[in-house]
Length: 171
Length: 171
Image (cartoon, rainbow over all chains, first blue to last red; front, side, top):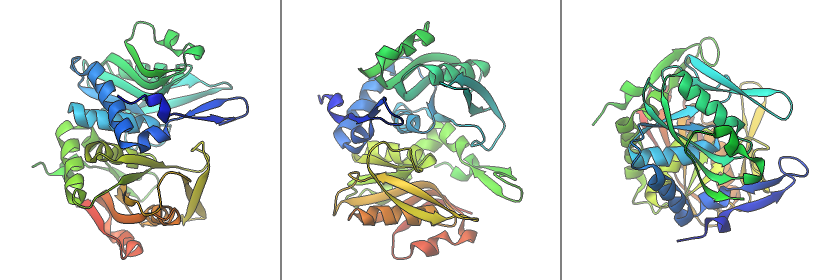
């Protein structure tokens, strides 16, 4: 087994000064690391009868799409406002200054469906909380939330209490 | 075999009046259609010794990531300006009014590497041409360009002459 942290690159001062950004692109670039990451996430949820996977724009698609392919489920893209062409429902989340929101097609998930939410990074948990809200607004059930990387010092997990949260790497 | 066109939804007047948008989300949402689409694209290129796959933000990730996973290659994300954290190279392309550009990490592909470019839609071909330019700037070789949907009436294929262009569905 590879140590996947060997494929995470620290970028100082991105997107702004004082932030140490965890760049995941070297992991996606390496065939063995990419496969191991996806397979380990799948392994954690393969017995949970996942019916659909939801990925958040844009990096969440890179994890969610191969998981959906391999698990034999569909993939639902959740996107920034105005990007999805059909009727949508939305949920907002707090930014450092102000708020932002995410949209999902109104017919993307069905009531009662078992949904796995995936994203690349768990930071403050704001985006993940909005994803949970979208799924539940649609009447579906969040059976888990999976991340590649968790920044534990930001306590995002606290915002997701009561849900099954799994991350591959913690910092 | 499913008729994948059954999973493409027409959205009139999106993103603006007079445009009939081909919404691919129902295809991603359906497990069998999603798998068939990815597998058919893979099948076309599986004997071409693909070494790395490049996908364009954001919908290209949904096709490129499972193809990379299944073919056993890495995935390189090409993104809008300012999104990638490390040093980048860029290529611009024309919009109806003005220009836009795409960025790729400077160390994403290696000289001589055999690259497959993937995106969801071939329209005017501007984005695909910029992707080709990025790959060739890095000294790598474009062995093919794969799309889910091709809008043949926009003649994007003409901009990609000399390259192996493959699309699953044509309108």
